[in-house]
Amino acid sequence: MSVNNSLELPEAFEQYKPLIEETMKPVVLIDTEVSKTTLFQSKFAGDPYFPLSMEYPKNNDGHPLKLLAQINFAEVPKHLPNFPEEGILQFYIDGYDDVLGMDFDNGQNQEGFRVLFHETIVHDESQLVQDFSFVKIEDEEMFFPVEREMALSFKTNYEPLSINDFRSNDMYGSILTSLEDDETLEDAFYDALASDGLKIGGYPFFTQEDPRAYGDYTDSTIMLLQIDSVGDDILWGDCGVGNFFITEEELLNKDFSKVLYNWDCH
Image (cartoon, rainbow, N blue to C red; front, side):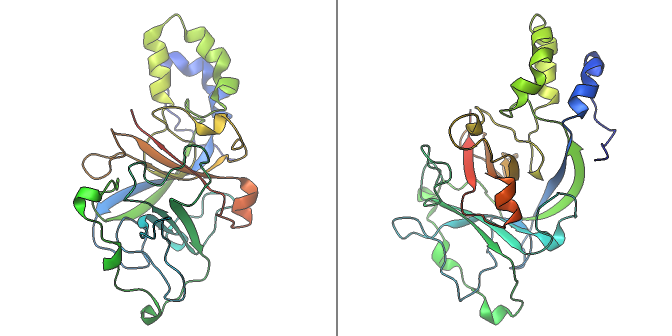
């Protein structure tokens, strides 16, 4: 893999650069613009592409889930191995629920969230749901993290293993040991490898800890999507972050039924 040489590290970490660069991996960074979107566009919030022939996702109480994000891979640069090159991937979560559809005991339990992949796109809009007024939630009941509908654009990059990733102790343990007597340098190292932001692929950021460090999720090494809190537009709880993960095999098979969903906040 050709490594992007623009990995910028504080000068004090130059000696560790070869080790860090070994972990570099492709990422697609997401830019947002508050805007109305078509049914087919990549977006946060707004109305989804949804064929009339399909059953709309609901929670256990029969309330409709709300579109968190829609990624139309025809709009995404061909940069990430094993990801679809076309089709629409959607992430729905429960806006009625104060934990936004996440199951703390089983992050792959899609009762309170749903990940749907539309491999073949129907372009005849008369065959698509047009009116999503049934999804509207009263503001006082609403915990939804995305405040406004946003159109997405994409750019490619590479990034190193993040300090939050459950594999970072194995990879960066010797570096952290050498920095433990210098709190300022240690903080700078954490900041340099924070990996926050909006993205597909790459490595995750957490405000707490990586849920994949425990239990049955260690194979879910591929990040499908990260949506971080951004200004007034996106807010997970108290300025947190949401992530979705999948295994390489599931991604290759376009099987999104066991996606791991996690969000946390300070």
